[in-house]
Amino acid sequence: MTRLEYTLDPLRAIFKKEVRRLIRYPGEMVFVFLIPYFLTGLVMAMGISVGGASAFGNFAAQTGSSLNPFVFLMIGTGVWMVSWVIMEGIGTLLREEQMKGTLEQNFLAPINRFLLLVGTALSQIVITSLLFVGVVAVSVLLLAPQGALGLLVAFGILMIGLIPLFGIGFVFAALVVRFKEPYAFTQTMNVLFGVLAGAFYNVTVLPSWVRVVSAAIPQSIVIQDMRLAVESVGSIVGAFGSLIALLTMGLVYPVLGYYFFKQFERRAKISGDLSKF
Amino acid sequence: MRIYLRYPSWIASEFITLPAWFLLLAIGVASWAPKGGVTAALSSTSVFNFFYWGFIFLIIFSTSIWGIGQSIRNEQLQGTLEQLFLAPVSRVSIISGRFARTMVTDLAIIVYTSILLGTLSHETVGVQNPLLLVGVYTFLELAVLGFGLIFAALTFRLKSFNLLSNLTQFVVIGLCGLFFPVSILGPLRVVSMAIPFTYFADMFRYAGYGGATLLDPILEFPLTLASALGLFILGLGYFKATEKRAKQKGQIGTH
Image 1 (tube, rainbow over the protein chains, first blue to last red):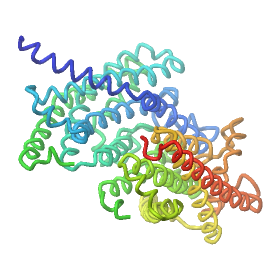
Image 2 (image 1 turned 135 degrees about the vertical axis):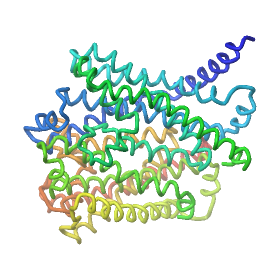
Image 3 (image 1 turned 90 degrees about the vertical axis):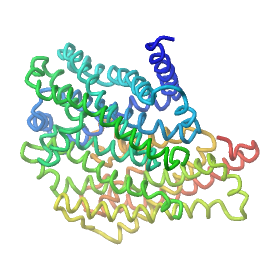
Image 4 (image 1 turned 90 degrees about the horizontal axis):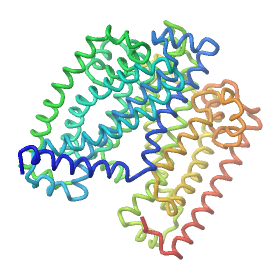
């Protein structure tokens, strides 16, 4: 077995297992696709009831975007949902293995622990791409077809944004192994991410100190830049700085996340936390 | 209560997540108000109160579904449901005991959320008609207990509890006028008007801060009482019938 095969074989196996697990529950998958549509419809209905006849004009002025409000919101909720699925997928993975009693066997396998997390992260790309097509691409093509070219750029931005998200997911996985109760933690963080990332609004309406926190999470940049790309491909050039920031997060967050994970794993091995649940 | 207190992370999650949802929706909606009017829209008495009372309704409705329906499902998964049903106590006592826990924690969350949101928005949460509010709240609890029993019964038949409860919440949020007037739903308004929870939300809001109601309050109040009694009797009857059938088929603990 060559060194490359030694790396790729387990990666392929983990990827295959995770994809199979993801598509095993079609009801849940359908639900994940419906949520962005539902939330967008809800916010629009609420907004129109508050803004009245000038609601759409107000929305354009408040957000500074000429995008169709439905598309604007669908990009926000779509990315938020992608982030939710990833955080929950990676964050609860180890905990679920713990509960099923398969975690120790996995950790005993003669493969790098990093591959275990990366294989799972890669499987999330499948669901992310499907969500992008079913939520963002559909609404852009139907309601803002002039942004079709920008969709390709938006997809690229989303893919770059996944890398730092995986890093945050590794931190979640570590915290969940340490503190148990995965869903309480991931649910809380995911809702807070929605507030900070501006899923339903432009983050500029947030107070300045909140904007500082918001700028540190990749979801904010991804949502903002994807909206810009769909609005006009040219305008993404002006957001070059934020793309650099996203790329930097892509380099730093996974390394930090994995380091954090290793620290917790080492501590869990000593304290016997890996087998406790 | 002991089980609930055993998981402090879930309690912390509830206390952080619920106001965060409110904040997320409120800021989202304020973006549709005139420019420079975000703060004004959020702290406008009518807008704030409209969302606030809708949100409180949602807390009561959701936790009842999860508190009753999911507890049955959890007992099934843990393998303790059959032992529990063998105990010489009425099913209603078992479920009401769980429901009482839900009510207590709901009230704690509502008080906490009111203080937090009131502080954030500089808006005082007042009660227009306390007596009416207590009456509507009592009817609402009775109605959601009945609805929770229907959910608990469905748990014996359908195993996808999470999916079902999420979809139900979506329907209630989308059609019962919790966060926007049902008038903007157009033809769908007919469906809204056929759902009893539309009137509960409407009366609940009316008792909380006043404002217009869908029907004359003199008519709507007895309507909510009749709906509450109807839902409770229906829920109890359906639960008992489903339990009997599940016993005959040996499906009490099947999951």
